[in-house]
Image (tube, rainbow, N blue to C red):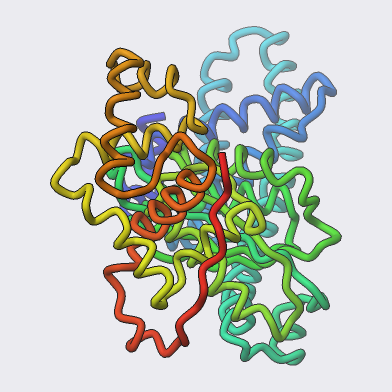
Length: 385
């Protein structure tokens, strides 16, 4: 392993720590592949592992000829090692068997390398097409040049990655390797049919309906979480070609709203439509947010209200989460009613307080509706407990 790392051309192009890890994975895959060729076992998985590793190196800027040289260098080292240990006629017969396997091995690796680099070239064109679609500037000629057939309708899927060290921030720059793992997972689930654009801590996908089942969206997000190795926030809507730019704007607004409301995982747009509307700029939203201004001098009461509404107005659960006696929760709810004028133990009060809390957490009061260019909107009721 060490000889390969030192002697190959890769050490000058891939960070050494990453190179050692990648070489370990690839050598193991090649050993599994060789064993499969010798025994007749299935070689699908090791070939897939090799293709994934080669794709990562292609995106690191490793030229294709360096990859082929690396294969030849690795094969030669193993062959020289085996030949030096061959002492008997039986050993030399075994070396001959391995030699035949090596010819097949190098042939398959050459195919995989070509496929990986070809896919990477197509991916670059597909990224440009995705950006054009999301900006409303795509043309059939652009799609043909990328070898992509435009669909009449797409699911517009937006994902925000939430690093563990940045609990309150939804848009962090993620590492190139995380981006590649996510791309590989999307490709594995949707083939070459999904168009993708990566941002600073976000991914926007355009997936044709034939290659995405909304009923399996939760499982799809779980796979993305595993690939990204971090928490995510995700949502999606469907849109036709001309409506894609507006849909992209909407799903990213929902991601921003989820961040403000501290919600992770998958939220369908229709499930957050009321909260989304409450978060829009306008006099109604500002009025709702201001309803909780009297609680600002009482942060304990405000936290109690948030917890109480988050537990669907369950006083025992609220008491457990706040580590207080249920009677203390009752007292605080009474004080909230006295200060705000809305009783959180009655449906009308819950309705108004929840709406006010959503508007406040969405930051409606921080925005200037004059800058937004949107007319004042009447905010609908928030979801009742």
